[in-house]
Length: 352
Image (tube, rainbow, N blue to C red; front, side, top):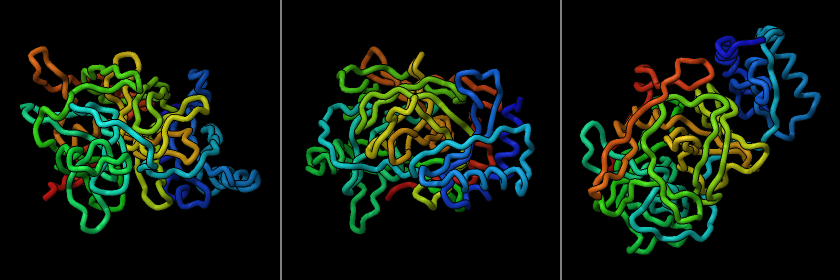
């Protein structure tokens, strides 16, 4: 039986070579049998549905013979669609004021994503911000403004009345290695934002009391996304190196699935997965497979580290405070905080 530590060690050694192989989309670490965790860990290689059985066998042989993964380390292959950013197809979404987490949002560009969650600066909470993905809040088209719209532009949100604020900060990788896809938008005034989370299409808004430091294999999650609405998921693997859109490499990511059911679609980018049992923020979705059955995420705690923010929590007097932080797990089947060296690979850009 292989341990998570053994699998992580070998995954790190072979990941660069594996991700260069045609038909490979990601490689991570999870349970060999999710229904029987006692059977230990394995390396999971996510390959394209088009890969032939013969080529899969060749990959397996190469992992053993050429890359040196010993026989005691299980290596399994899961067939998936290509990983791509979940940035948006036009679906009608509503205008909601004040703006909670889980609703349609975008930059001044023809896209729409999800306003993941409302956050505040820490340790002295004074301002509220909308957190979402960089590719949702930072416009790519020439001549675009830094305006933020709710609902998003693809949801007919470009009218002046739907402008809630503008881009505030976003994260950029120093080199070609990515850890997060993240940005903050600042409202014209705090009162435009609601530090709660919309629970699907019920209209119910819940309080997110804070965020988790670690996300672990097997954790049950829930989320609201702009396109798919309310969804449930389960963490299939962590320490997963992912190739997004065939070219961008993201390291140590989280893969969320749900018994072959759809967990994310285009437009769900930026949505924040919550731990099911207590609604603590856990992971941020930014990409997924074309069939919608896999959500690719990074830990929300990394957002807190990079931007110096916490989940915003409403107070009885109509104000807000910073949420609590809990759940650090020094276990190999869980995510870890970014190290100082990793944080130095991320630049925070202040929008003009």
